[in-house]
Amino acid sequence: MVGRSLKAERLHLWRGERHVLSGINLEVGAGEMLQVTGANGAGKTSLLRALCALMHLEDGRVLWEGRNIVEDLAAFHSQLVYLGHEPPLKADLTARENLRYWVGIRRPLSETDILVALERVGATAWSEQPARTLSAGQKRRVALAGVILFAAPLWLLDEPATNLDADGKRLVGGLIDAQLASGGVIIVAVHQNLPVKNAAQRQLELTAA
Amino acid sequence: MSTSALQAAQLILARDLRVALRKRGQFVQPLAFFAIVTTLFPLSISPELARLREIASGVLWVAALLASLLALEFLFRDDAHDGTLEQYALSGQSLTWLVFAKTTAHWLLTGVPLAVMAPLAGISLGVPYAALPGIIVPLALGTLVLSLIGAIGAALTLGVRRSGVLLTLLTLPLAMPVLIFGAQATDLAIRGASYAAPLYLLSAMAVLGVTLAPLAASAAVRISLE
Image (cartoon, rainbow over all chains, first blue to last red; front, side, top):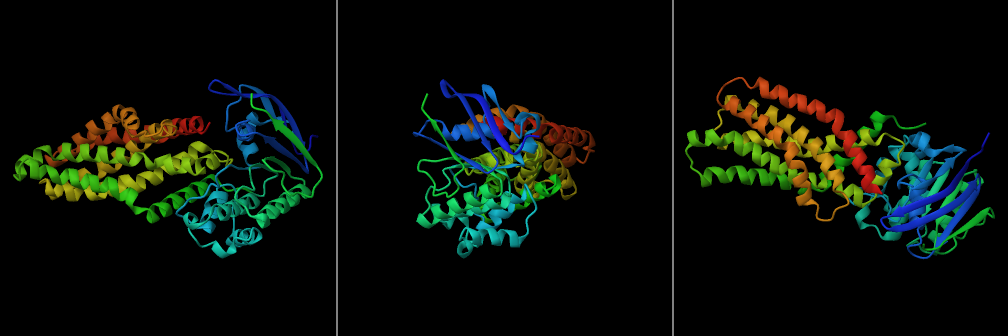
């Protein structure tokens, strides 16, 4: 029996003429976090996108709980939440509506669930405003509420603390700690280390190929 | 516990309709285009109803085809921009099904209003009242096929900047059968003849489109997300 873990073996990814990932190996277990660092253009985002099969790998495989993810992509996807550079919010919908539609496609939500999550990220005050009127940091907080709502064991976060103030950065740290404490698996692309208490961290530094 | 496929489709429909309600301009534009083109013909050719009636079906269908091409660009563009499409691909639901729901929403927002508005344009072109169902029904079916075919083109050109022309070039040849049989159905209706035969062909195209186009479009969406 293999527990919750994400393992990648010899990942090779090409984008046009560039060999973006060349033979990346990684393994993250339950309650562990992997921080992926590297210069701009080193392939942090590509790595995250390749791990959730949004990008086509030239070679190598990704294993979730010991099984190759391509065997049942839908099942794997329902175990993860991926948050990219841009919060996936519709400018014309309010924060609440955005969460209802975005997360609702995965799992049924009650309005209370949404309000609780918005409160946890300190976004209650602007939950009825259209996303276009929110600042980048406010949108990021709403997106984090989405991450909580998915209640998925695997988090793939790309620069989760961008645009956030000091309080917001602590919030991200707190959310990550809670996720790790409940046995979650986190892979996060970062420029600066996040204020996380949990010790089970690893680093992976990517260098531009 | 996860959301059922049907609920997911309902959420996508509700979301797209709500966004469209708050962003009306985008969907009024093709309708305005349709209205302008069809009203220019009586002005430029002749106000004589007998002559207009001769060309009415062609005018209505060409205008409808161009208007729905105009509307195609928004089908996936905004969702690709803000990362929504990526989240659909990662939702654990079948992307083909979600793309079908999106395309249906698009048809409800562009094709159905067009089919509802077209009789007004038809009357101004001298179409007899009895022939109006011969405009509405074929147009409703035809725009459904156009939305489905267009979804493939729109998905394929997602990565291209200023994709309008390319999208038109890709979609237009595939849209020709719809134009031919649609215009024929309306023409027969105007002449007071039975238009069942071209209508059956349009229905067959719709069935083919519903079953195959979402598969192709979702594959194209996946490629463009890379």
